[in-house]
Image (cartoon, rainbow, N blue to C red; front, side, top):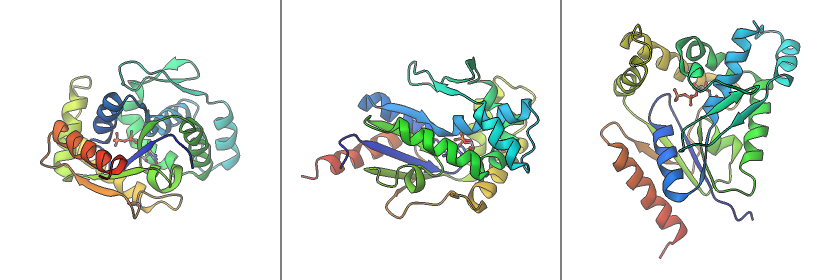
Length: 226
Ligand code: CDP
């Protein structure tokens, strides 16, 4: 059995997974990996290079030209796509509108999962996404499945995006989250589903501090069952 600890956090769009994952990583001195940022960066590349999602050959060729890297600074996600820092651009609507279609492609998933599994080897990590507890790390020591009321999730994400994108509307954000949740839960390849052994965390009425405390208590009882 491996001695490193993996915490897998999965759940619906914009339900606070990354907020919790970052806080946990900081508290526990673990590495934080935002797997969604990887799918977003691939999507940005596909948009820029007009990759036809129905053409498997083109998709496979494009993937060979994509090099992603995380640079950890203060537990924020800093991701580079072929050495270009794209952390902000991948959060904008053109990427959000296309990412779930890209993430549904078998070739894309196989490549990302392979890279994610490599990152979790021999390191203590917290990874958030959609299939971390089911596919990427089915043996993770702790699995959390996060959810929250869809309206609350849209309001939180709208607040986050509005500062940098004043033209954005709450309706647009709500529609995007609903559409992505639909695509993510109904796709063929490792759809978003709760792992049987995942703890459900509904944070509709919780503050970030409360969700952190809830999870730290779970970790404590897991690592020190007395
Ligand atoms: O931050 P938010 O919850 O809105 O999404 P994200 O974590 O940045 O993920 C963006 C999209 O990537 C999701 O809607 C999924 O389509 C895809 N994704 C995935 O398929 N598998 C993962 N492990 C992570 C993200």
